[in-house]
Image (cartoon, rainbow, N blue to C red; front, side, top):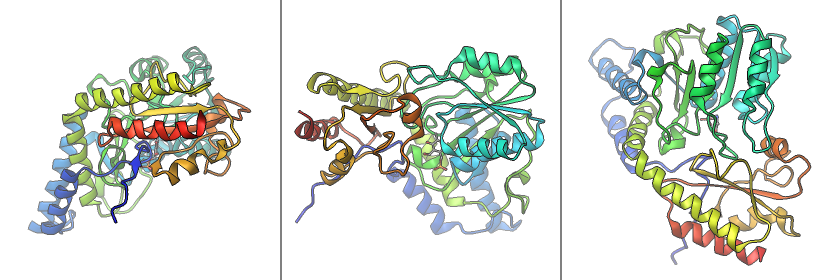
Length: 378
Ligand SMILES: Cc1ncc(COP(=O)(O)O)c(C=O)c1O
């Protein structure tokens, strides 16, 4: 008996691999096994594959290949930028926000707890955006600063004006790290404009493999590594490289850039369609963050009114074959709830569901999900 295929609306958590990426990775797995650090032919071939991947990513982002370093993903890249800056760039103060991903938040909190830096949190406005006037004030009051603010929030989708914030930070001689894990592959960067010191990407967020990512380190910053060992990654990250992952990462980013405009148009249509149906066919449904304003087209965070079964909404969606994600302050699957929702909606008893779209979704996925929700809500 054929099972009805499940609907996947959790693309901010991870995305399915593009078959073309798998194909490329398998080809390298089958035919190229040398250690890239070996100087013989087998090693040199694989080293070339890594360097071609690095050059591909650098060309897409308009930076130099020497500014790209491969990592195990977004978390390691965030850690490297933050810990490396504190260790090597004379950082006295870190300015961040309560809405950052834990890869950033737990790292800056630990550094502050150890007494290595003073941590200052920028205020968040009612719509979930960073209060840029407050950021300016914090910058003017602080010594040598690292500002770490995310480009798009993974839970509510709010976007930061990365170029404007970067220019502001640089006016105060600060260092700017922007966690771009949710926007890499979905947004075009021109790093030749030098508005940011560190950005990063994780392959699995743009139809590439898991466990591999990269960091861009602007050439003017010389930081110490997080993982010491061999001389791989120009002594910035010891350990034999994840060659297949790196090839998959570069292929996925290249594919994403090739289809970025059509993907954006399609996913924006899905998001707008879902918002329209939620607004017109449901009562008292709200959106978290600035969903109708400066918001990433892949993410829609919906706040449902409290009902007797509200806490079971995610569970019921899952049983109905729809995978999406929670994030309410108290009722998500995650122990303790979402720090993001708690910050923007303190004391709420509403239920949050994050729907996040990817290139393999269709309008039918949205319609089926809405129709299912209606059976519980109206
Ligand atoms: C904004 C953001 N930063 C960092 C990460 C961590 O990335 P990874 O899981 O590749 O370590 C994620 C993953 O969800 C994310 O959404």
